[in-house]
Image 1 (cartoon, rainbow, N blue to C red):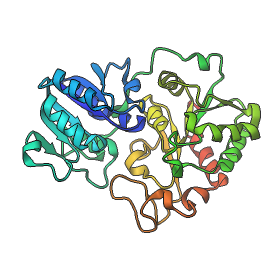
Image 2 (cartoon, helix red, strand yellow):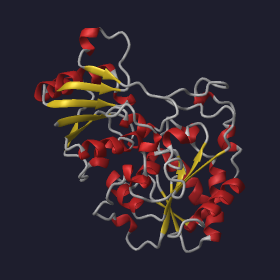
Image 3 (cartoon, one colour):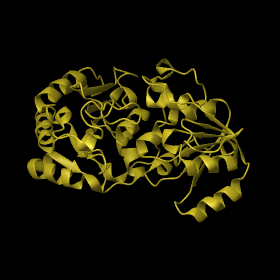
Image 4 (cartoon, rainbow, N blue to C red):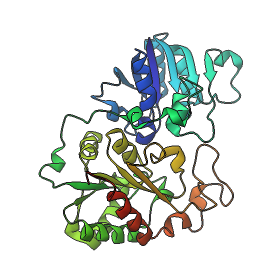
Amino acid sequence: MKVAVFVSSGLGNAILLVPLLNKLKDRGDEITCISTANYGGKEFFEDCDLVDHLLEIRPDNSAWVKFNLKYKGVFGEAYLDNFASSRKILLSAQVVAKKVIAQNIPKNLPGLLTKKCREVKPKEGLHAAVQNLRLLDPSANNEALTSSSFSLPAPSNASKLIEGLAPYIALQPGSANDTSSYKNWPIEHWVELIASISIQYPAKQIVLLGDETDQALADEVRADLGDAVISLVGKTSIGDLKSIIANCSLLVGVDSGLMHMAAVYGNPTFTLWGPSESGLYGYETIDDTRHRSVSLHLPCSPCSSWLSPNTSRVRKPEDCPDFRCMGELTPEIVFNEFERFVQSQPSF
């Protein structure tokens, strides 16, 4: 059967669709991923055997009209995760598919406009990838997820940016999204942590990654540590990042798309959490031998979640007056956790 999967959010949320795509592929479906946002999802799935076809719809209304006319009735089913369950996408999905399975159906839509839709509402306590799996199998739970659920072959093309590099740690000091800076760890903490790692593990090169919104963070790290780090911030395409992440010894960072990328390529991750929910997005609950999530677990966390955020202190995470959940996570705490984790990694 021809199926459509809409990709309408950031890189990380696109990668969280991989277990669903694997299940659809196992079922024998012909998969078309339809990107409706320019956040790297389409580029990530390029040259990936998991997806048969890639389409991109630009945001102007004329592009949607052309898409609907060209693909009317082509797909047997269309799948919409939480971020794709918008009014415009849902209406378009009903034009191009005979059946639509969505995590949320927008309110106030007349029944006539949702007659092809089946809603599978998100369920608390489940990983975001399981929420996506439930579109296919509503009985799926966290036990359905294993490392193999996310497994993708490493990209065949090596980035020239890592030619000649010694074994390296990929480190992303920001969330690569200037609208989510509340997820970031204080830069002075990063400087202290990187210095400790460089002293303790001199054979490992540290490569800074991120997009242009992380440039100020990278510049400050470089100003303090100089040649102890290599900065590729703002210099990489998605294709470069796929190669760089697939070949690193370890990914260190916060809740971001590169964390998800490392997981699908089978590399260990060491990530710091505060406002966002590691149980919803992280990988330690899936494989605690390869992934470590470090958090203070304050009573007001997690305040950043599309599913039942903790609003006991603030209604929006960016309104937090002090960001204690990240600020009080000291470099000493993190480095001690880092040492315990890497000592458990036979390939590090």
